[in-house]
Length: 88
Image (tube, rainbow, N blue to C red; front, side, top):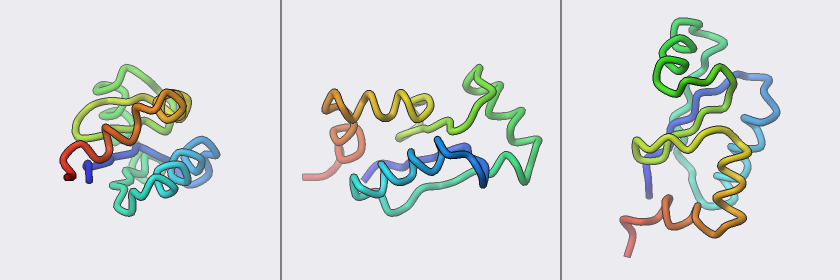
């Protein structure tokens, strides 16, 4: 299973949708970085991604983008191969 990191806030509906999608795909361990609790981490997120909005999602160090990009990968059939590429 890939390592999934998501920059998030508590009340972001797109973050909740992204988490639900990942859970449906079998991802049970999401490293959530709460930028609402630690504003300095939002600065780090913006420096890394060039984006201000959450969620910002990484799968095995690869920046995926936000929920729209995550969903597009799923629709295209490209999400599961990213999540399970190291599994037999």
